[in-house]
View 1 (tube, one colour):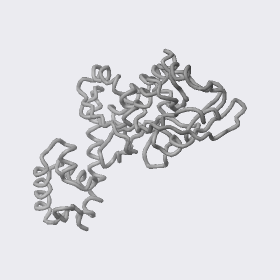
View 2 (tube, rainbow, N blue to C red; view 1 turned 120 degrees about the vertical axis):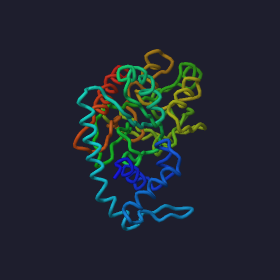
View 3 (cartoon, rainbow, N blue to C red; view 1 turned 60 degrees about the vertical axis):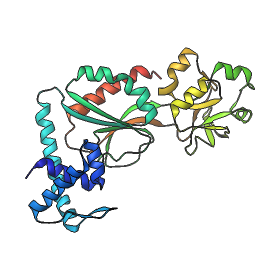
View 4 (cartoon, rainbow, N blue to C red; view 1 turned 120 degrees about the horizontal axis):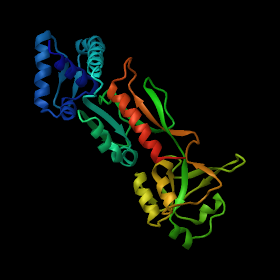
Length: 302
């Protein structure tokens, strides 16, 4: 029995679509369908019910998946261990991150990573959706904010701090900002998530908290776009350190409230490296984690 076909079956079960698996593997959907049909013929059972609109597993398909999926995982782990003996990572590394974080903190360092490991192919999926690492066969993800409980393993990449910042030109022509309540007189650039869009939370040096309503006519779903609007003088933006630290050092953006800590959700947030919980971490994942930690530590000093 062809192990590659079994892997294909496991992926179809997880993603629920011949087309999705074909797209992921750069195959024609008909070839995936034929491979599964061949497996069904070899086993003598129907694994999926097919209609023009839906693909659903049969009871036999579910039972077969429950038994075969752990074995395929063992095969993959054995392959990883054997490949890693050479100490030179090979194969395909699948990574996902939010669009802004990926563009700022991963993409600039990819040339160096691929120079170091020329036999490793990198698939980088940048999306603000939360990707199912198992269904999408991802090796590692970068997740921002508070980490939800899950069966996944995680390592902290960097602590995240937020700053209310604006361009010098905006601050020069706008009412003076002395305390957070002065935001009522200002235009804020808003991110369309709970908290970020309606109020920001400030903490003074004594630890006292205050929730301040914010308003603005510009709402953008990209942190990088908000950064660019702030630099262009369109208003105040609440942005993370990994995105604006260089701008603050260069003076293209200014911290509007240097005597306050500020957030939209929680003061104890971070960027996390998240990966499937497996008994063995492949060398390619270990090297990427080490590389990204070193790279981002140079980018974010505070």
